[in-house]
Length: 186
Image 1 (cartoon, rainbow, N blue to C red):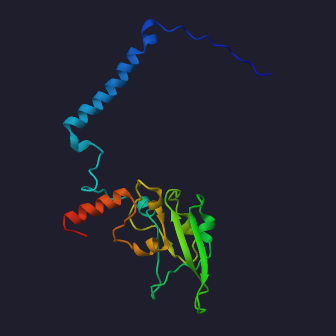
Image 2 (image 1 turned 90 degrees about the vertical axis):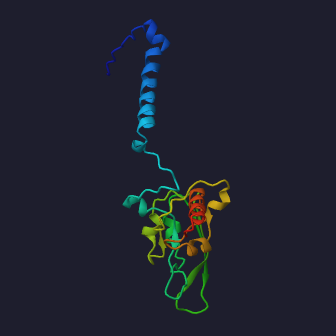
Image 3 (image 1 turned 90 degrees about the horizontal axis):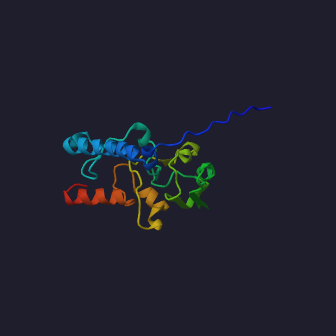
């Protein structure tokens, strides 16, 4: 048998019932942060993106936007084995296989889509790929979009953006690209 001890709640006094001391304590914390950041803006954690960009930590560099790697003859390294599609916990990868006319490589992906709206950037697709055909090393973190359809990467999108090339996916990347173009770079 379990014994239970009943504890009576003590009645709240007048100040505790109107919550003024707790409101004042919370407001004091907020005002302290406000004035510290107002008079010492260099200590603020905010970055003025895209003018300022932080160096990504190593773990974030290995979990950025996807790309498909190419062979020496500029054909995709992917052999449409469906391992990445099977390993994906978010079910955001869709592959349709087609056969090459020659028998050098048996299959290739006729369709290779990744839905970034569903992707959790876990990298399991990269680990599952036996051909090392998919990578997440573009150093681009997909941002928000006004239209969900723009978050769907097709095979052409995945093959086009190699590391160092500007992406067209994500509002933050578009803003950075526009800023760099206005400054005469990229």
